Image 1 (cartoon, protein in one colour):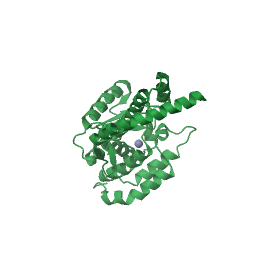
Image 2 (cartoon, helix red, strand yellow):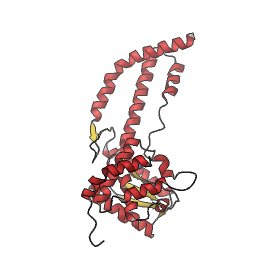
Image 3 (cartoon, rainbow, N blue to C red):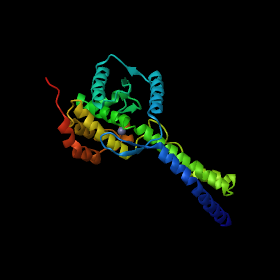
Image 4 (tube, rainbow, N blue to C red):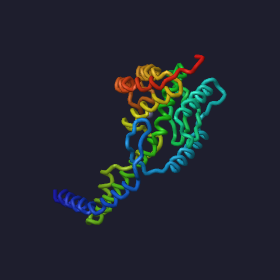
Length: 275
Ligand SMILES: [Zn+2]
């Protein structure tokens, strides 16, 4: 019991010391500046520069291309390229270096690295019968990229890490033993969620859906196909849900959100002439 009481008092002193570090943290927050997500106008906290983000995306893309079975010259690879180019044109981001790759794996997944490197797995074609359905998933991934969701996640993780470091220092200053500092670190449970390819948060998922819906409509794909695609994805047979579902919200909520935004998307949708 006395150990616990002593530990609590140490934590108390640590928190008091932390108060001196708060102005420093606030300064960092102000320096980071605020970004705004396209289409939704949501304020974002981003500490990573677009250049850093671009470089990370480039680096990661090279790694993936060197180890994954990239398919070229097939009909499906051509569809990925064609649909991707049209969505990229609608996104109007001249600073992005767009690439669209098909990976020959039976996984229902897709992702876009910062800076515009889009990867689609062959398994997605089980659910994307039409180009408009393929556009749904690709525009969603492009939505993540243009809204800088990867950089946003990295920034949040950096803040968590800084908060941890500051508190650990404060605990040390307050006379906490190395063991106490270590115990604090473990309790804080930092790390593990930095990374470009980890699942995005729910808020970012809905935002990518919303941006994707607008992009596909602007690119000339009927946005109503998004409802068909997500319905097929959520009713996928098999014991295990497809990988894409384990990292992405699905079901009624997602479809209801898309339906709520459909009016906006249909207003900008112009079917391509001659089709
Ligand atoms: Zn997503």
